[in-house]
Image 1 (cartoon, rainbow, N blue to C red):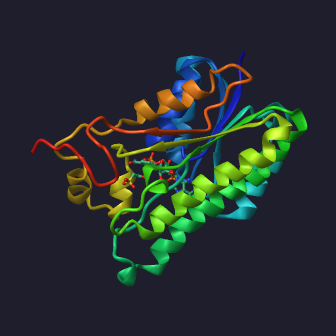
Image 2: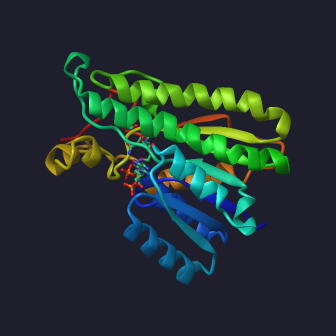
Length: 253
Ligand code: NDP
Ligand code: 8X3
């Protein structure tokens, strides 16, 4: 069955790979992000390559009015969202808490927590009305374990963990699946964003071991949407084989 999949943060990393994976499998997509050129390029490519319908929506998940406008102005054809992948998110900075940069904290909390909530608040009523749907939140190992200087990023992902559980409880009677996928280290734009464009520092994070790729994560996100109607993956921690915990890696340097 052809589904409609809404993916936030589809201009890079996991989101882009998730969009490709669903398009390869013939599903229609609403893709979002702030970088319009990248969104439009991806939409064009997926339409041409996979003959699916793709609606690019450029907005910032931190801005409630933009989220509201994006969802309320969807034409009927696009309102039947079967899967919402709440992927947009970021870490900014890696400082001990007493040296934390308040603007970094606000960007993380506004994006990872409030942006995710805004999306759920706008999309879940459409699912409730149809008595079907699947919300997939991209959490993190950082939402399971706290690591040195992870303070606020970890806090934001622990919040995703709790919000996922709460949403599942509230939506169970409406036949809506709620899943968290919590990856460990993955090589995307994530570390470049965290280190504010310092590529050398970002690349060093992945030295000496094979991290997850965006495609690894996309495969798992796709998989959880292929299960029978009565089966849900509540929570899935996905790790590189060479990573045992937030701070334990087998590195060969
Ligand atoms: P990337 O930096 O590669 O991609 C992040 C995506 O989020 C981009 O498409 C970006 O789009 C979008 N985004 C960021 N801020 C906003 C915003 N305010 N409004 C709309 N879109 C936004 O990172 P990843 O793919 O690695 O990260 C995706 C998710 O996975 C995040 O939630 C991250 O926390 C989580 N994660 C990442 C891990 C990793 O090691 N890489 C591991 C575990 C979890 P644009 O800039 O165009 O707005
Ligand atoms: C990203 C993984 O361990 O860098 O969420 O926080 S980690």
